[in-house]
Amino acid sequence: MSGDDGLRARLLTQMSDADSALAAADALCTACAALLDVDGAWISLSDTGGQGAGTFGASSELSRRLDELQFTFGEGPGPTAVRTSRPVLAPDLRDPAEERWPVFRDAVLQSGVAAAFAWPVSIAARPIGALGLFRRRAGPLAGTAPSRALVVAQLAALPLLELISSDASRQRPVDAGGRAELPSGARADVYRATGMLMEAMGIGPAEALLRLRAQAVAQGRTAAEVAATLLERRLPLDPADWSDDGNAPL
Image (cartoon, rainbow, N blue to C red; front, side):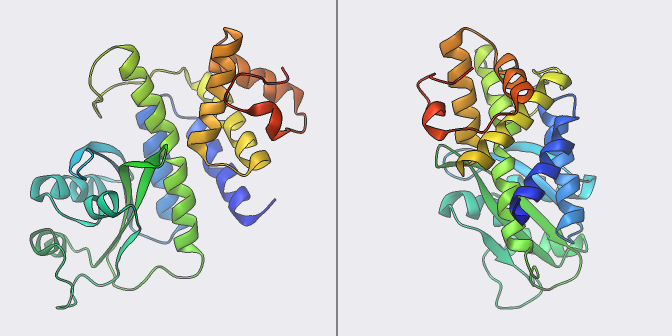
């Protein structure tokens, strides 16, 4: 198992114990902050223009406040990451040359934050939110932290997909105040099975979850039922058997 695979497995386990999609996002942010040696993390929802639509997960109240400042001022590393589909790094907000978000920067510095970073969170190659990180001390993310942050941003798509799917089934707009949809036990199976598909096929979480759901639709079962069957068998997975047309060997 590679370093990224081990990291992904640990994070999926922590997320699967949550009792709601929002709680899973909070758990991911909390784990992320500890793993990446930062003081906090948040996951935000955004519209197609990169403007904030709500804080989806946060590791602390300060993390949530920083995302709310982005929404208030319409600028910050998160909106920029969504608009550009690229990571955004601001290792020293006190640097006079850092002029990208003047209003946001001043407000953040007053909160005692010296560095901020963001990665886009995408579903089907379209950014719909961002993973944000902050530190009270200035300086770049060291070592493997940037690649680990990318893994976290990929996994953030899972609870977002759950929330979006639930809201769609209720035929109401996506709202970060929406509440959990999968029972915690079912979430554990779905997340773990998704992790197995990701590892076996070398695909991202959104595509893995899409393939799992395609099997469920094709077989007239729930995603949790298909996930449980997959976990019970623990068989090697052939990518050809897990296309998105519902032809799984179950």
